[in-house]
Length: 204
Image (tube, rainbow, N blue to C red; front, top):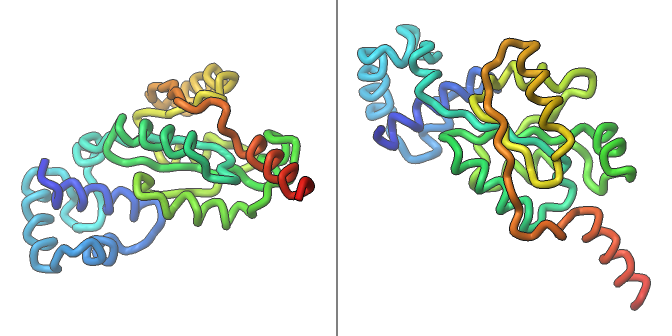
């Protein structure tokens, strides 16, 4: 599929989650309004975009392979970059969910250095990420159901979550595959970096 058509489908899909204008995002990427209108006309003809021009049809949505990944992402390190690049390579659209501050505290047994909003902004700025969302504490599957990914990518350090994710997807009747990603730098972690940084500061 041509880049412009894939970009339009992606932005229409994302606008359904964020409520933001797909036209604004497409023009920021350098596409002219005239070109966008012509391409949307063709996508409507091919039954990928609805007649109202603001949403995907079921066929249009199924033509996009959406990958969902999650984590704390308190300090972005090479392991994160490799893992997110690997996740993006599995599909067309990569959506990342960052844990809330309370969830991060439970997972890492320490207060995160950055707030959930700061972590969202950091992850959103990464080139391979199409959208970053803040997760929900009460039920992570609310976000999963909103995104409706075809693939859920788990990092090398999220082994325990695989059955939990598979069972949760069954409950919301979502047919998503779970992909296990490997990091080439498994010793990289935000906690380790923070610990070493703290020790180096004390040693000065």
